[in-house]
Length: 504
Image (cartoon, rainbow, N blue to C red):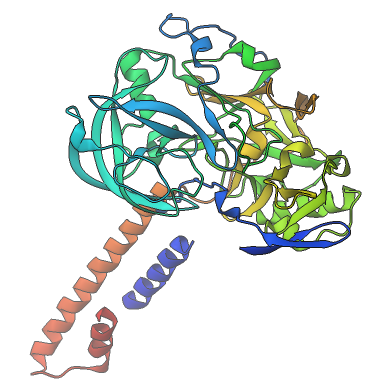
């Protein structure tokens, strides 16, 4: 009986953790070409298992430590290849471009050559680098890397001093560095719970706040709205403001939604609309597993049921009815003759978020210029576009597709995320995003995130505990069977043989 229990427990643990060339679709004809979608970033870590009102408007932080205007346009890049800033590591300083990622918590830099990067951080040349001797590995939804933990001084533009930061030096990777990217590391800006190998590794921003005294707030503007993710023109860029909010980067009011859990920046989505059509799904469907704000993910990612409902609604609302499933699935592009744009054929998409007043919500809306995305020129006669939304098996992710429409504030001090219309979210002179509210949330559950899956670190604790129980039970069984074996002068029963074979 105990053996059967252990088998059942083992199966439970396994269930917990079991977790080119393309056709380019044109409304009237098919164009055959090569579509390399590998530039899409999805750097949501796969851990081992898991408001309304005006916002802060300051030109510098209250303590006068930093001037936010100095941080404007300190980012380069675009949504397809990521937004990054130049930082200086070590003594003497070595300059690297570091990807800004609100969906992870490790500050990691290349410390060995890789065919897709131009240079790396040479720890041997830094007199202040200190290795901790601890290995570290991080697996993302796309790609992974392994390396070693250490510490060193980091100089950040417009931030005083040289704080000492935990640095993961990447020694090997797979699918992490991609062709065409111009960054050599990643700046994880999420909470300690996501840090690897454990939460004792203090994340970058925690260290900066503790050592410099700036407020525990940062804000992010990503200015790639409506631009090709593979363009050879100057990158769009943006701004990462550490310590507060820069009012020149947004227009209108700042709306805040509470942070539900401090691991990712987890928020609560109440409903989605396509055009003016409510999808009418249970609000828990939108928050299945989790709903997070993640600058390291290129697309808007939706749980499978939500994604299917969105595609169906867009298909019915769109003035074009002949798109194949390949376009919605991300394997085909829709192409028009040069100079023709498809955005007039598609509806806007709205996401309702719970406001800081629990009985209210607000909605952030993106026009099709943000989710019907231009791709690099594949033929001199055609302009081609991809679908900027994908399905997800591990939660709803508000990635760059949406974030490019807004100036997003990560107010960790007040445990909230703010959204305001970004001043650079303009395409052809037209604003491509909007915010409206407040709306009553009386028609949805009081907690749409309730009843989700257990968080990953907790699952690991439970799983290890269950495995320990099984190990103790098996040990007791072996001891008992050993005693029986001695009593019967070498006789081995079918039962004892079965236990031995299970162990093998």
